[in-house]
Each structure stands twice: as structure tokens, then as C-alpha cells.
Amino acid sequence: MRLKDGLIVRNARWILCVLLFLAIWGSRADAQNTPLISGGVGFLTTTNGGVTALQPVISPVAAVPLGEHLLVESRAYISDFIAPKNGNSGPYQGDFFAGLQYLQLDYLATPKVTLTVGDFLTPFATYNERLTPIWISKLQDAPLIYPIGNQQGSSIGVMLRGNAYSAPHVRLNYTGYFSVSSSVKQFTGERASGGRFSMYLPDKRLEIGASYSRLLQGQQGNSAGVDVWWEPYRVPLAIRSEYAHGPHSQGYWVEAGYRLSQWSGPDSWLGRLEPVFRMQQTFRDSPGQDQLPAVNTQRADFGLDYYLPHEVRVNTSYSRQFASTGNTNIWETTVTYRFLFPAWKGRSK
Amino acid sequence: MKRSMVKDLVLMTSVISSTLVLAQTSPAPKPAGTAAKPASKAASVKQEDVGQRKFDANCGRCHSFPQQLSPSITGTVVRHMRVRANLSAEDEKDILRFLAP
Picture: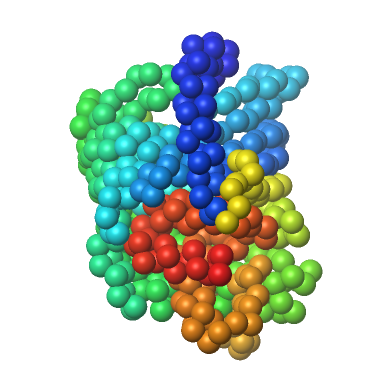
């Protein structure tokens, strides 16, 4: 929805009609199912190789339940990227962007099957679906291997997902999708299919997943990946990792975050602090435009997150990136505020 | 480049192992912002524990408990989480019972 393209004018009537319909339907919701607005507001700064860029962001999520089995959900991303006009010198210039990251209709078909249609986040590995909200991710930048298998972040089509097996000590989850090619500016997509299967041990908070994606247009190619998350109960530690292999490159990232809440509790000045470390590497197998670094690259991210009261968080990080084309230092700071409130006053019980 | 890669891996391993060793010496804390348990009947407390355990095991892996949660949107929040986290209908009910006892 880039405003300068005039798309918002063309799509405004359509979007307003949808919002009006959802508002009328949502107002009939029962006591607990009022539509909500959630998401994050943030201010991001990045200094990469000595060049500083600023980015105010708001990323709201709307969720509207319809009846007992339907849910409409969408997330927008509105930002202004302010950077030197000539790349690394000259006066600063803003580049405004506003767009939907996903807009989907979920049908809770059975207790263990959900059918989703629309523009949804591509279910490859874990980062895209779980960690892209600015108030959740512990580091500002996405991993270098993020483009592998994710088809630009979202896919337009149909997705089946749910819980295949559930027992107290083990859970098996599945996701499968098919997407179509689309060149509509607001809803671009590629023809592809894929899915993810995972085994989760709730007692250990250990999850192992495997993803697969096949691009069915242009230079068709396969992407595959595995992910492991471990977040033990006894320790406020989160270890997350992914490995992905695409048609032209491969790589991994491993992230460890340890919140110091075991000293004086989570609300003490020390307990609000969370050091984060992420190691990542990419390997170029053949030339190709897959948005990964053109040469083998290593990067170490050292972050320090501070959880202030009232859902405010400050992330700072220093990264050192090593590549044959040159080594760089990257300094980043993010301030985020997480919000969650009813879209309007709900009915009382 | 290989030498620096080995250095990075050694550094990463030592950071993880040292945090684990440090952390195992202290008792486990409650998740930040988790709602206090209301004094009610034993059965409902048990049900709430089930819901809290499922919240911690699923939703709590990515984010903490929201500091302000209006009772009017608890059903919507959990339905959203059911889709995102592949929860079953039973999980959805248990977590809803925990969020809105």
C-alpha cells in the first residue's frame, strides 16, 4: 500500500467496505470475543559501516472473530525509513512505507484442523511466523537466512494447519500450504507449496521442526530447513536456532537469550535485563538472486534488552559482520511499546 | 576466516554453558507478569494450573503475559493464539479458563 503509487486511493473503498462489514459483525460478539487491536510501536536506529538510519514504525494487528469458528486477522507495517539521500552522505531523506504483512481468514474446522485462506505469513521455519513482530524479536535485524523458503514473507493461497497429536508429554504439529502467483502490488505472491512439521515436548519446552518449500514458478527450486528451540522451565533461558538450505545458498543462526530475573525477581532493575547473543553464517553455493549475502558471511550479534514497565522495551546491539567483501560494525537500538486493547467496548456478560 | 569461525563457535558455546551453570544454582522464577492465582475452589485452581501450564508451554515461549488484558478480548486473544501456535480446541479452552477464570 505505498501511498506514492496511489494504491490507497484505489483500494480505499474496498478496504473501508471490509472494515465496515467486520465492525458490524464484530459488534455482535459475545462477552469475551470482542475484536482487538494489538501490536507494537517502535523507533529503530541503525548505524551500519558508519552510516546511521532512523525508522519510526507502527505495526498494528487486528483480530476479528466471526461466530464460533471464524477469525479474520491482519497485520500492517507503517514506517518511515530516514537515511542519507546519497546512501552514505548528504542530507537525510524519508522513505514512507505502509503495507499489509498478512490478511487472512481462519476457519477452525475441527478441534485439530484450521483452514486458512488469504495472504498469510509463509510457514517456513520459525522466525517468520513467531518472531517478526517488533515487540517480540530480541534483536532488531532478521537472520541472514530469513529469505530462504519464505517467499517474500507472505503467501497468497490456502493453508491447513493444526495439532496432529497431543499428549501430556508430546505434541505433533503440522502446517501445509499452496500459494498462487500474484502481481497485485498490495498482495504480491509466488506460486509455491510447502509446509512444516514439528515435535514439541512441553515438559522440556523443547521443539524440533522441519520445513520444506518448493517454488513452482520461474527457476523452480527446493528449500528445506530444520529448527530447534529449547526454553527450559527452570531457567529464564531461550535458545533458538534454524538451519536452512536454499537453491543457491545455505546457512544457520543460533540465538541465546538469558533474562537475569533469577536475581531479585523479574521486576527488579537487574531482573529486567536480558543479554542476547546470536551467531549466524551463510554459505554461497552458486550465484543467484536469493537476497542472501553474495559471498560467505559470518556475523555475531551481541544484544542487551531491557524490559521497562508498561510493556516498553529497549534493545541495543552490536554486530560484527565478516565477509570477503569487507568487515563491518553494526550498532542498533530499538525502543518498542506493545499494545493490546479491544477495538471497541464489548458486550457485558 | 576458518580460525575466526572456530573462535566464534567457542565463544558461543562458553556463553551458553556458563549461563546454564549460573542459572541452575537458583530456583525457577515465575514468568514475568504472570497473573496471581485467585483463592477459589481446589478444582478451579487445578484447572487454572493446567491453563497456566499450557500458556507457559505455548504462548509464553515467544512473549510474556500481557500486563493489561481486558476480559472482553480474552476469547479473541486465545483464538488468535490457537491459529498461530497450532493449539488444539482443548488447549484453547484451558488457556481461556486461565486468562478469564
